[in-house]
Length: 297
Image 1 (spheres, rainbow, N blue to C red):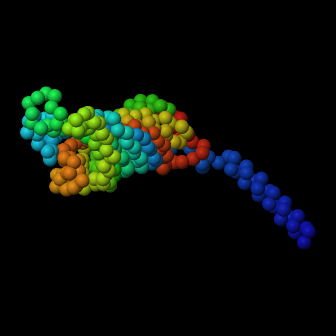
Image 2: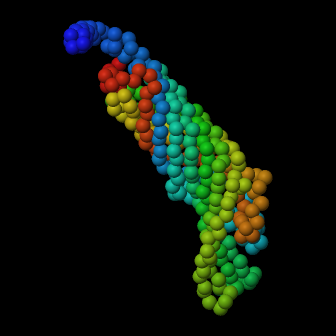
Image 3: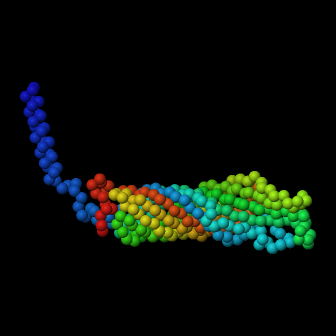
């Protein structure tokens, strides 16, 4: 038995030594230039990115519940703030790259905000400039809207090796998820024999019914990849231009609380600028020994 074990041990040592010599001389797993070229010229990338955004509401047509009788109706028009309310977004990116060009689909959760103000005045109709029967009201209205955005994007990577800037164009569809609205009312009451300023508690309502279920637009932008081994770090800037109304024309006056304070949604399109950072991973030819993006074309 001892002799048999000794013989088997010696055979094992010989076979292992022979196998190691064979593996040292084989070139089966060694990457060749053709494989490297395929990796560099054609690739699928997948990853995540997230960031912040600012919006610019653009007025198409104004609507109001109250109508002034002793001054111009334009005095009660809403004044919109541009690029003042911060939002956020997170995207899943799937991109097919071929010789500098890319086609990308990026399902995105996007939260946006925008604000507007308007001003009303009531008097007793007296022609006196210092009439004591006056009331002024100021409305600060904050909208928060959530969409599922589905963009289709074409990119072109300009130049570079480790650092690769790109430009991009595309189109998107936005699908409404949720919306809310907060209204702060403040003013000055002169009717009590003196000047009395006041500020009421904000009115917060669900406003999903006031927004269109879908909207569409186009986008453009630029960005840069930083190639780190087999992965890509990404800084991305997109400017979305809304092409359709984000307001529900059917439900414009349906919220009783908002109608009671004289508010009605205007017809709006919404522009948005978004900045994101993220990471992309290749899906083809992954290996620890081949750093594809450290190669030069």
